[in-house]
Image 1 (cartoon, rainbow, N blue to C red):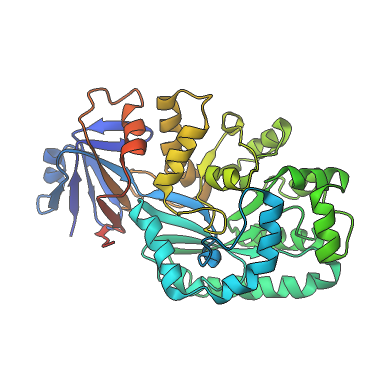
Image 2: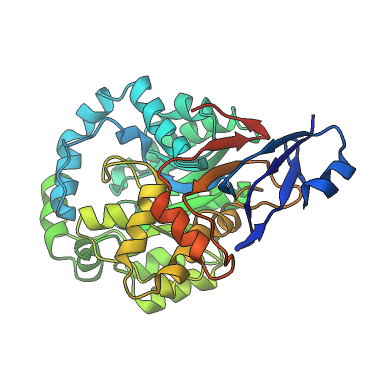
Length: 406
């Protein structure tokens, strides 16, 4: 049965339409006034969200690590290198402490904040069942990691096995994809073979890139904090990739690069020119003291929470608030609208899934919020700004045209 949602404001392609409604079943059929939509579908069930309500397309969080959802205060924050050492020391314990309840709690936290699609970076496959059963759409990024030449074949076979397992359960709410961990942690042969699969099977691809000063120093000069770490844990004193060599492997391959806080202008331009995106994780970057992404240089900016391994919540609303406060160089209303676009329209473009927009033939995934006051001007960014600073939880969520309890 067709349905109609009506609210004070409807977010469509970066603008707030006033007193409009949307007609949908599993997908969006039309956008117009309620009166005109009822002419198209006279028997449609109408739901009116009263007050100063806003209907957004469901938000998209393209980058999180659910397999570390058992962490609260085990891992060390304040320094990227201290955090990385603590990951090596506590990873096995955190994986053992990962329960179905903790995974579901993390997924629920995202849902309550309006996230109807998320990207899960999976290193072990421990979150596969939880992601498959999540109410949201999930882009399941099977991650490859490993820099030892002797382990390339074993790591590649393990990756292919995990990818196949996720592909066997794919549907229009579960999308198998691929993640390359980082330039410092993936052997170039492994990198080459995995990207070959990505191109052959037309899979979505993501990668961590230049998250910390230590990473850049290691890749450029084979020295610094990473040198001691690699000598201690991996018995090597030279990086397996250069920055230029790693980026060139993604040439003409659309990719979601995460962090990029230490990327130079020319490297961001190279990412922009390949029709790729940058996922900004401001709270994670701050907590690990990684620096601040120059978001003005990014052509297609996305926003992600990262995992509970380097954050204190998976709420995309918390992430929006932090990004708004962090980037003091940009006027607040302009920044707010850019950030809302980052979790909707921009993410839609990056993922190539019909989500993140209220547009005909897109999936009927919506997040509804209520503002405390009416706003007369719908075109100057005020609604976006007020949405970010005043909203802490969605009032209602729809996925595939059905209201979801949370």
